[in-house]
Amino acid sequence: MALTLRSPTSFMTAIDPSKAHKTAEEFPSRVHVGPAKPACRLRAVRASSHREVVERGATSTPQAERLHGLPGQRSGEGGVSARVPVYVMLPLDTVSASGGLSRARALQASLMALRSAGVEGVMVDVWWGLVEKDGPMRYNWEAYMELVKMVERSGLKLQMVMSFHQCGGNVGDSCSIPLPPWVLQEMSKDPDIVYTDRSGRRNPEYISLGCDTLPVLRGRTPIQVYADYMRSFHERFSDYLGDVIVEIQVGMGPCGELRYPSYPESNGTWRFPGIGEFQCYDKYMKASLQAAAIEIGHEGWGKGGPHDAGHYNQFPEDTGFFRREGTWNSDYGKFFLEWYSGKLLGHGDRILAAAEGIFRGTGAKLSGKVAGIHWHYQTRSHAAELTAGYYNTRYRDGYLPVAQMLAKRGVVLNFTCMEMRDEQQPGHANCSPELLVQQVKKATKVARAELAGENALERYDESAYSQVLATSRADPGVGLSAFTYLRMNKKLFEGENWRHFVAFVKSMAEGGRKVSLPKSDSMHSDLYVGFIGSKDRSSEGKVPAAV
Image (cartoon, rainbow, N blue to C red):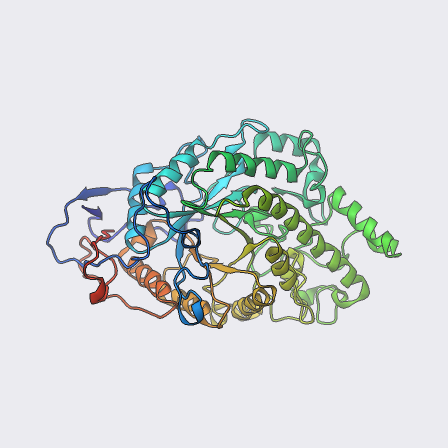
């Protein structure tokens, strides 16, 4: 049978790029399932010969082969796997606010198309605000269970994100999913349980790490709440962990990233490439800073964050703290930044320690996401990274401690902005995503941590894919264990975009060696896109991907 996604004139109706918010209409809506017609179409055999559709109850594969990027999965020179499996992020509203799967039939068709392209699996956010919205420890996993079964039937794998943050107010957020209502009630009673900036602005995206170990959520600490959530998830999905669900990404901050919400886009608070602001002014963070200052005999340093750190949309040289010879490099500055970044590392370690204990022995990988803050990277202070909690300056490596913390727990470091090139960034922003990625790769190598990647922004062009390919193969011994593409929507399935994507997946399967596919027909008729295999694969079952 052939899966066909049809469009009358062009391949898919293009999405207006000017729209700030997208809906569940982001992926194919009209589906035709029927025999393949002998028209002029590009047919191809399945390239992912390493993976067959495995029905439940069939003979299982060895554990190492079920997990992405493990040594021995498929050896190249030196016995190290060169293949980089590609995953695709599902829409943010894959599970709707009402608790069901959004557009389930279209989703199933999209999954089939992804599999025929050689994609390893998909990633989905498991929203705290949806699962535990009915009350403390009242979990509803049913929509996610339906999704897991659908993904399994499609022959794909799953990366599932424990999303303890709200959706809405950041780059790429296309819907609004707040934290659970009962948590919001606790916030209204005690506003200091959320991050706060110098002017007193509260941010409800994520619970402040300042109260990690305090029973501020109806008798439980935030860490206990996150652990109970993950434990319930483990119990509900135990039959699929390590088989269909091959990775659990543990959310540790806004956007699921280990960072402070220093550059919130909601209500125009921050605009690229502003330096952001420190988020240490809730009463719990202030008490911690005061105690740290007293401990080293400088009580005056604990009165609050830097007074001269500027505002969200300023540049480093506009401030006394971040300018070239600013106080960031003074004794006070070093004290504050050590404390601020240390609190973030401690927060990550506490959550990951809980996750490690819960998921140990399941066969599922653990991962944690680190933000790719590349603007002002070429200045001495790296101001935007400092306000986000990464103590990275010209004189100090801020990513090695992060990589070491993750490595200690056996957690994969998932890093963004893998698709970006320096030359594509505005000169006034002093960006260098390429140097940043190189630094993070070096840190993971030293820490002996596993590295995976994502693209930071939606990209469909060959230039972005080429950059990811170059990054994946640039440094011997520091390759990517997996790459997750952001994000599945209608635009991905448009003819030329799809052709570029399929070629990219093929190239990643070949260890980063660039592969080109034939051009599609110019009439935008039904397009069957797959891999052109070598003769030794000609006997494999053909799985045409009509998209």
